[in-house]
Length: 125
Ligand SMILES: [Zn+2]
Image (cartoon, rainbow, N blue to C red):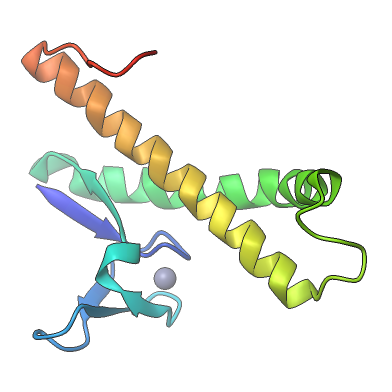
């Protein structure tokens, strides 16, 4: 089954604010946004609680371990300058962390899919 996770805190407690629109909110951290911003991952029903916990722990650990190096990398690359608003830097760092988390969960899905179905990934590795 497909599990949807909050892109900000990794919680699975996300719900549609309006069934006709693509807006969603998180009961874990009060994040609200578009449906396409959610992180999705494929899990077996019986291991859903475990998968949710792992995904959430990964996002938290990734944020703790990488926020400062990512900020430094943005500075080094010229993406941000010393005078850049800290709110803007925070948004960019959060975006980079959630994108990395999402990409990792998607790759885990691909790997599990390959293990189950034995299909080889056609993308270059
Ligand atoms: Zn959240």
